[in-house]
Image (tube, rainbow, N blue to C red; front, side, top):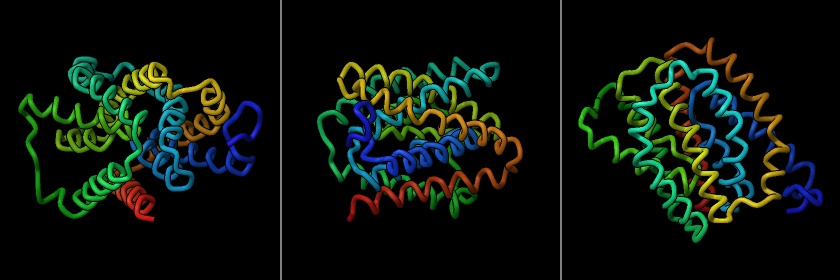
Amino acid sequence: MIFTDYLLFSDLNQFIIIGIIILISQIIYATLGFGSGMFAVSIMAFLYGKLEFIVPFFTLVCLPTEILISYKDRSEINLKNTWIFLIGIIPALLVGSILLKNSENRIYLLILGSIILLLAIYYIIGEKRFKFDFKGFLWVPIFSIFSGVLGGLFGMAGPPLIFYHKHKNLNKRQFRVALLSIFVIMTFFRVVFYFFLKIITPAMILTSLSVVPFALIGLWLGNKLHHIVPENVFRILISVALGISGLLIILKNML
């Protein structure tokens, strides 16, 4: 996929399409505090395949925007809770990264898409009927490990953490900050692991930098929306974002 001698795009149209996908994903991320990976990786994998390129590429794109958002909300980040999760997440990220380098099994994506879709259905029709109590300490490593593997392999660490934090009765702001404080550090370690495993190449770095302007515009728009989206709409958007992501992953891997 050579668009120029330095960028990994087949042509200008692909550059624009991927740029728009990145822009929308960052609007989702800044507005909801999650969902950028589920949206962008799902769409790009559906259109182009090549997970071993898409996942590290999107990770590089997200790094500067996640740093910006986390710096902006740094006073509200709970480092104690963040590091408790990271103890399980970081080793699991390495496992997921190794799986990404050595295999691309369609059954993994079908399972992931099914989990996300089931979560969305639960949020829409079952969340008010069923409540879970995650007060026990053992829940933290369980959700951390699951999130880390999904993050390293698919770039989609959100679903387990979303499920856990949604049942902690956090308000909109607390929910967003709790996820952001974990995701930015996860992204940093994913970049390190991908470099170590030689998944990231110089051409991939330049390609990711070329779409960063799309990401920054999306980040700005998302931050504007974050302050005006009502709480009930926010929760509906979470469910819809999850459902669309899961359905697209399933469709892509059934065709």
